[in-house]
Length: 298
Ligand code: GLN
Image 1 (spheres, helix red, strand yellow):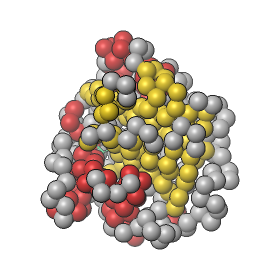
Image 2: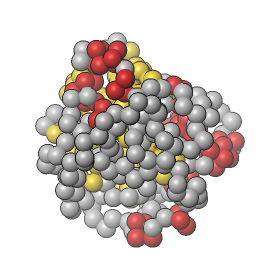
Image 3: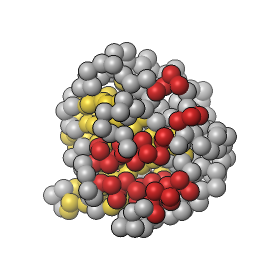
């Protein structure tokens, strides 16, 4: 996925979260403002949400078409409300299948996962081979393999630990190619947001939606430099990583938004430093370095 968004808090409609925001996922599907790899996100989209009074596991709606072409989604998104939502628009990586089963959010039991980035499928398969009990991946897409690995880890440890272990294990392979400056652990109190909120990005130039899928343009980088921005939720918390792609969050009166990029030009967006883990519930966000060797690595 090339852009994702998650909300935890008071119930909001899918339309409010994904379509109505000035630079929300709908607009990001043709005009993302901070995407480092690729230009548009037209290879599909998906939304997962929870309705805990009806069932423990989430509901999902995924399509392998651009979000802006799906009038049926637009018609239902205004009448589905949830206190925990994970949504994503996709720009398929080079060589990855464009199909609904390769489209986030991926799910297992009560959990949902979205991946913004790229990882060598062979590296994930190598780790999966050590865990024959892992659920079968939905697709040959790197993100689906990654999801299966996270599900396996999450079955035997807290969700944040599972995500941190998978990301650091796969990310280590690409660290030699990463910018050294990005690896310095943040020295502050890990329960406090980083000191300098990022200024909102200037509005991008107007762009018309393209008629068909996006060019496979996010594969120009070196394949060994894994990009591993994940958002994972079990309906009670959001766990997200910044690893090679942009990630921001905003604490609002009634909940917390976590997103690949700000979906408006309002105040309060805070950039998550690269190689950090974010954990959010309805009231609080905590951040922790993934590279300080404090027990999350391995
Ligand atoms: N690699 C993932 C895919 O192909 C995610 C792509 C992305 O973040 N642009 O779906």
